[in-house]
Length: 352
Image (cartoon, rainbow, N blue to C red; front, side, top):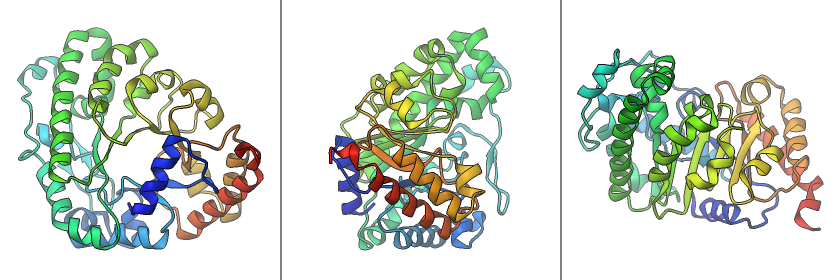
């Protein structure tokens, strides 16, 4: 992320008035390589290809906040691989991590991974170290340590249905598993920050939050996320594009200040649920509008989304989740035009 975009993001998080409402997208392997005209397997295995894909996005849309920016990743395989998960990488499809835990007794045999040496993590981090100078030569900085969240990782290690059943049937075992993953993530984020001192943000993705009741999240999620976000960083970013009404009132207590949600709750309702201290990043429907809509439909939908806001502060216009596959440059440009148009009509929110 450039110095200008980083300063603007920090201003938005502080509640400063920015016109037009800034736009940002989470971009990674489902969208970025195909948009740039390369296969996913080349994106994952050829570092120069990975670098040029991110550089192309930044240069094509210099005013857009691409988060986390130069994301070194291997899809959902990144963290589960450190626990020994077998990972499948089709040539041009999303990779998949296979289950490690097939019975609750196997939780006892899991050991704490070493993020310096285990799984795909050393390759992920070494790519950033190797390309840091070239990234900085483009005028950008590596700003975020990144991981999936502890609940998300648990679901990949065990299976989503099996993990959710564990919460109800054997809560002690569930806590044992989440505790181990959280301890691993604390070390992993610490290592990223120690290795790359320009990092001043943390970004976690965890959709399992949306599969829990409020009581379940308060027991099995909130305490662990609070530990992970309890660090002296400027941006504490969470992605959960599953339903979020149950957890939204607890996001402030979790410690985050930037939230990317799904589409089941409007931005106005989320503002009421989360309070005024969290910047909301969303939430145009990603598949049905941004990917499937025409540029004209996208432009009008984005304008209506922004114009309909009760307050345009602490908003980063985006889609409800990460950038979906199939979104062209023309569609992103239409989105940006719509956001600017909606920002102009919504000047009442800025006291003008």
